[in-house]
Amino acid sequence: MEITFNSSFADTLQRGLHLATLGLPLQLQLGDLRRLNDPENAFWTRQATYQPVDDPDTTYPRVLAQIARLRTAVAANEPLRVWWSDQPDDRLGMMWLCAVLQGVAIPLTQIRVPLMQPTPEGNRQERTDLSEVAPGELATYLSLDCPMTDGQRQAATYGWRSQLAANAELRVNLNGHILGVPANFYDDFLKTQWSPTAEATAVIGETLGRFPVGVPEWWYRYRLATLRQAGGLA
Image (cartoon, rainbow, N blue to C red; front, side, top):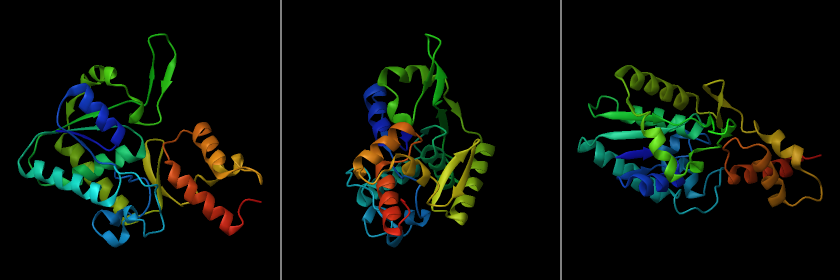
């Protein structure tokens, strides 16, 4: 089974490889990580502080169903292959998966997809996340497939436990390290696009375009509303 933490990329894998694929849009860079085990902390229920837009692929029942499907595959000793990148949602998802598989002797391989690479024309291609990978490119990345060693799996499990213990409001990739940061970490991106006459949609659109760091639109909408309420947009 192919595992990814990006819904759009899950569709790409299914179309391109015609293999069983599981998309787990856990959005682990954002919010309370206890939501994975406690519905009271789940922003997917739209009852917590963080309120994502309505997306059928990221609703709480959908996410729970996908996790249940993963556990069924694990119980059946089905080999897994995880596709991930250095985007925080992916990297954290890989760490979470290793923690779920701790103590389970199940084959696990990995494909780490580079988000930045040279093009045949000699230019540099940069992606925000795996949703920008086209089906025709998958064959190129299959050569990167390699087993995840016991040491790698254990290290990733320790990393997940550390993130769970810290349970920051927001997690970012800084120089290859996933670090917890305050919820206002990206607020300056919004402030540079804001003006008293600008519509929220325009501010968020400009922010997403100018700073393609993989933060979802709903997070910026939430932060913009928070800044307005607190008078932080002078």
